[in-house]
Structure formats: structure tokens, C-alpha cells
Image 1 (cartoon, rainbow, N blue to C red):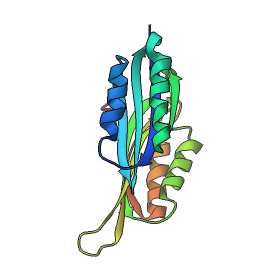
Image 2 (spheres, rainbow, N blue to C red; image 1 turned 180 degrees about the horizontal axis):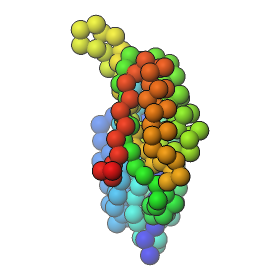
Image 3 (tube, rainbow, N blue to C red; image 1 turned 90 degrees about the vertical axis):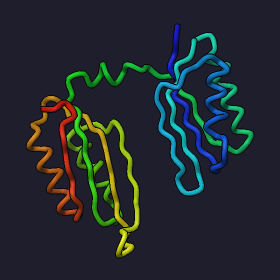
Length: 179
């Protein structure tokens, strides 16, 4: 029987972190099924879903935990891969893109609005870059969200776009189902 393991690892960025972690997974005949990795400032962060034989699960977890001795912070959690698909089967997927001048509270305000509407954030990436000519910090966000089937599309989408106007950012919403 196969099990799914979520591994999170953060620590000072250095060459070879991904190679070492994925070698540990491979040593126990595991497979990386999904991951997100990024350098944030001087820190490196990894979030990884691994598929591994149940017989190798505990040994893999212990081996990965040995990285704590090198200053890494990490967690390992057994999970169910199909949970999201089953739990959100009737929900509608949307892409949300936001751009505008950076300022405090953008992520909070968008997340708060979505939570109030019972919309689930599946994934979110944000970044801040300097505008080419002025050097003003620009904020960008891309998210995948799932809206409950009971929620009217126009109601929550119009409200989110209006929130963008209040935050002085542009928000675009598109269906990921083609509808």
C-alpha cells in the first residue's frame, strides 16, 4: 500500500538542498508528486507531496528529520492525496490575477474577502518587483480558487473586482473550466 507524505523544509539557502532532499525520497523508493520551492530572501522553502510505500514511510520520515541537525526546520505529515478532489468535487475553479502598486494589506484583504464568501484558496503566488521606469514597488498575485456551487458567480466576482478598486489594484478573474 502507498502513502502520501507532505514534507515542508525551510532553511538558509545553499546549493544542493533540493538534490539532497529528493535523493532521500528516492533512497526510500518514493516519488515527488507535487512540489513548490522558492528562495525567499536568504531562506529556501520547500513544500512537497511524496508518494512512498507504507513499509518505507517511517524510515523516510526519520531520514528527512535528520536535516534538522543542519539547521533546517521541517515537518512531515501523512495526508490523503484525493481529499481535495473528493471534498471540493462540485466546486468551480477560477484563476485570480492581481496587479498594482504594492502596499500593506493586499493579500490579507483578498484572503479575507474570499474566506467570507467560503471560497477556498488552492494555490497562491505573490511577488513584488520594481517598476522599470519609476522604481515604484509593484505587487503581483496569481491564485487558483474554488468557489462553492451555491455561490453566484457574478456576486462574488463583482465584489472582488470592487475590492480591487478600493485597494487600487487590478483584479482579473477567469474560469478554469471554460465556462
